[in-house]
Image (cartoon, rainbow, N blue to C red; front, side, top):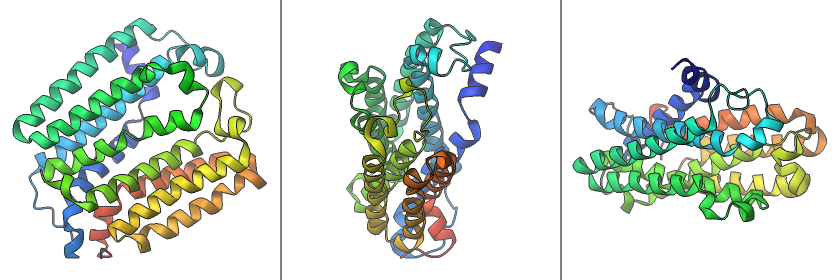
Length: 292
C-alpha cells in the first residue's frame, strides 16, 4: 500500500484533478441556465454534482495510470526519477491495476445508467474509448511517428466526457447546441495545454516534443488552431467577451516559442490557468452575471 501511495502522490495531482473534475460537473449543471442570464442558484441535489465529478476524477486518474504504464520504457531513459523507473511499483502491478480500474469504470457506467440511461451510455463511451487509447488503437508504431495526430486521437475523448457531465443533470443535453459548444471549448483548451506542456527545447529526444518534431512555426500554427477551437466554442456559448481576451493572451505568449524558447515553463503555466478557467467558464459567467 505504501508503494501505491507514493505512486499516487507523485503522479496524480489531486488538487488539479479535483479542480478540473468539479469544473466539468459544475458546468454540466450550469450549462442549461446560460440562456436565462440568471445568477446560478445552487438549488441542486449535491449528488447531481458529485456523480459527474467522481466520474471525471476517476477518468483523469485512470488515464494518468495508463500513461505511466505505457511510458515505462521511455521514462527509464528520459525520466528515471519517476516512480516506475525507480521500481516503486513493477509495471506488471500497474497493468493489473489498469485492468481492474477499467472494470470499475464499466460498473460505474452501468450504475449511472440505471438512473439515467443517456449519462450511463456517455460514460460507457468514455470508458470504451479510453481502453482504445490505452491500446493505442492497435496502431501504436504508426501513431508514435505522428505526434499531433496521436494527440488529437487522445484529446477527442473529452467530447463524450463533457457530454456525460451535462447528461447527468439533463438527460436531453445531447440535443442542445450549447452542450456541443461547451465540449469543443474544453477540447480546445485541453489540446492547447497538451501542446504547451511539451515545448521544452532541451527535452530528451525520446520525449519527442512538438518543437523537435515539427519546428516552431508549425507548432505555433497547431496551437493557434486549438485556441481558435476554444474561441469558436466560446462564441457558441455566448462567452466570447469572457474567454476571448484570455485566448488572445495565450496566442501572444505562444510567440515566445520563436523569441524566447527557454521561457516554455511560462507558456505551460499560463496554459494550465487558461485550461482551468475554460472548464469553469460556464458557472463563472453566471456567478459574475456576464452570461448572454
